[in-house]
Structure formats: structure tokens, C-alpha cells
Image (cartoon, rainbow, N blue to C red; front, top):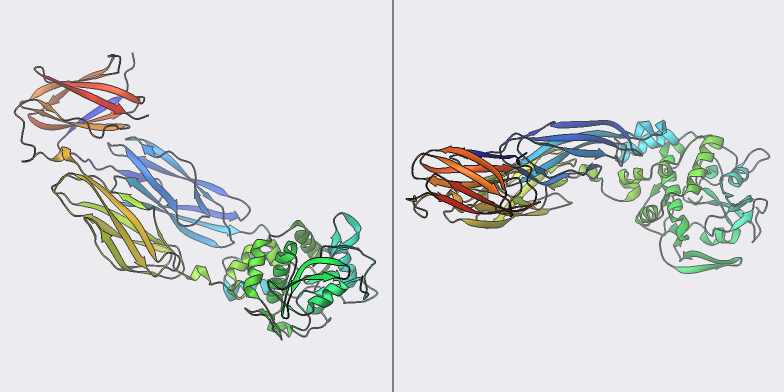
Length: 560
């Protein structure tokens, strides 16, 4: 018959050091499109003689995702941790994955690097740029477009809008921007029930009139009802006001004395047209268009910037916008709206979003919310090396580390460099009392995203190591109950033999069937017997130890 695989080891030290090997200290994903993902594998190898339990594994950026994996590692076993890279931006990523084992002595790390790329090479020059550098690169990409006249016997703005804004359900009509009404393509003109050409970036905000390039740039020219267009006038964009009812029917638009709110379905469209204009037209065009955080504006600025940013996020790019952008690029102006193709550009442009340039801020990351330190003998000091990662663009200053409970730290202030990591030791203050000890750690830093981070601390002072005055040397054959119990994969016994002997170990199931019988040579004194149970199923088992004269036994519970 085949016996379950049990292994025992005699040892004079209770806590053997578990050795862990990582297959890589750096994993490179190379170039991955923002519409795609790529998986790599980090392999962990347990070279020690005790089971390891992977408590936490996390990355410091959501673009790197940890895939499904097992957490228990038997001695000698290995596990694979899938890591999936799905970039959100066309930038270079340099991040970390951290791993923490329960009852361990330190955090483990592996560096992760990868480049996010856009499938459309049109924006190749924007790679890994932010702020003014990105704005300039996009400007250079989309400027100098093919120009068309506002009105002419040749192809003009009227003709282009009949194509770009065609009703998907009626090829003879166009869709009006602010109302969504479908009007006949031929129903253009200046009458109250006609449609005309709306400059979403109002002509007076830059004084470009109907002259090329800005006055005829169809990326911001849209069909609108004549009287609705007139009501909007040159108002800034913002939320609120009175619901507008036109002579041709009710609309979903609102207005007040200094702002206009379009219907919900095109709020994002409006924001992205405004973003295009603010990037396309710089000082080299004769007018420098910019967004500002106010309404009631005049000159070459427009508001309200924060409202447009919210609209951009609330109303994602539609198929209608994509089709329109493609027609303008392919058939007419030969340039594109970057914010339709890649909406995330806005988050790297503070002048458009009004938000801080986050890649220049420190970003503090500490793994998990708890640390379970390796058990120690009474009187021994416990140690755990904890890592802090900064995946931001500036250094993070840790100004204080507060500790509660019977713990201390090796240092309370230090610098975590940008794009790097630093660490410190958590120390358990030695005690002669066995039991479970807990505490809390608070890391205080100038990281704007998480200025305070808290972790709970746990350590066990194990009774089984107390072989001194509290537990005098026995005068007879003694077997301490196994620990841990219940257990999974590995447990251990302390056995005292008054004289050298050949110990016999037997294991039985609940029906009394003998599963294992082995002999173990033992010297006089205390011995540790470590048992690994790789093939046992979950359940109750009974064991006995004998030295030829006496027999001791007990019950052990193996977890599934």
C-alpha cells in the first residue's frame, strides 16, 4: 500500500529559517498597447523545510494586476504568480510588486517595468510626456491642418458638416448638437427653423471670426438650430440655470447670464472640442486659446475648466464622435482630435483639467494592512523588515512612525526617493511571557495621496520553547502536543527522552487504521520532531510515540 508522505526532522532549534527564492528581481513587459495586455510570471521557490503562507501580494499601480495564485507553499515547492500589465497611458511605467508571508521576517520585492503605447502612431511624439511638453507635442501633431472656406462654391464648411454630422438613421439629415434634433441637410440657413454653423469655441473668444484656421475648423463647428445657437451666444460652459424652451420645442439645455449647459448626451463632446481648441491654437497661430476656472469670460479664454473636466469623464466618447473624427481626418482637414482618440491625455495636462500633475507628486505604498511576524521564543527579540515604495515623481519624506504595543522601530524618519523604495525594521520587545501580542504602526509622511498609513502588528511567543524554570526538565518520557494544531501541511512535536532511545512514531486514522510507522533515533533530552503531511486529507488523526518502555499519544487535526 502507499502511505501518505510524512517527513520528520529532529532538531535542537524550534524555528528553522525558511528560504524563499524569487525567479526575478526585475520583470520587463517591454511595449504594450493601451488596448491590450501582457502577462508575465514571477515564480517563488520554497527552499526551506517549513510550509510558507503568502499573506499579501500587491502592486503599487493598478496597471499591473496580480492574477490568481495559490497561497500555500509546501517545503521544496514552487508557485507561479501571474502579473498582467495593461497600461492606461502611453508612458513608461516603473513600479514594484511586494510580497509578504505570514510568520515571516521581511517583505520581498520585484521591480516591474513596461511601456504603454498607442496603436495609432499619429501620436508617437507624445510618449511619456506631461504638462507643457505634452501640450506642445500634441500641438505640433495637429497644427497646420488643411483649411476650407466658411462659404464657397467649392467644398466649404456647410458641405463638410453635412457629412460629419449626418444622422446615422437618416442619411438625408444632420443631427443638431445641443438639441439632438434631426434636420434635413438642405434646411440650412438663417431662418428661425433652419440649422446653421455653431462655433463651440465662440468666435468672440479669440476674435477669429469665420476666417481660417480657427474660424473654419470643423473640429469645433457643429450644426445647431438657429435660435438655439443665438440663445447660447458666446456664453461660457457650466452647470445650472433656467431650462431653455425654444420656439421649435423644449430642449434639455440650461442657461443663465454667463453660462450654457448642453444636454447630457453631448457634454463630453463639448469638453473634448474645447480641449482640442486649447491645444490646437497657440501663440504661433495669432491667438492663444486657454481654459480658465471661471465664467463670464472675454478675450481668448473660456470657462469653466473644472465643469468641462467633469463632463469629459461623465460622458465618454461616443461612436458618433469617433466617426466624425475619422471623417475630418481622412476626407478633409487631415488632423485629429487627440481627446477623442485618447481621452486620458487630459489627465496629463493640468492646463486643461485643472488638476495637479500627479506624476510629479510622491506616491507612498506600503503592502497590506497587517504584519504577522515570525514566532519567537520567550526572551527573544522579533524582527520584521518592512518596505515603503514611492512610485511618484518626487521624494517622500517619512516624518514619524508611531508604534503602539510591545513593539518599536529601527528609525522614525527617512526619505523614500522618487521611483524607489526604502525600509525599516519593526522590532518586538523581548518578553518571557508566552502568548499572542498585537500592536499598531502608523507611518506619517508628506505623500499627498496617503499622509498616514496604518498596519496592525502580530507576533506569537510560543510556549513550546520554554524549557527553563517554568518547564523543568522532566524525569520521565514526555511528548508535548503538536503545534500548530489544527494545521495544514506541517506541524511539530517536542519529545523528551531521559536516555538515548529509538523512538517509534505511529499515525492512525479515526477507524484505527495505521497510516504510518517509523523509527527515529533520539539522544537524551529534548528533541524537536517536525512533521510534513503533504498528502493527508482534512480530518482527525491519532498519533503515538513510544521509547520501548512507555507510550504517549494524542489527537491532531489536519485542515483541508
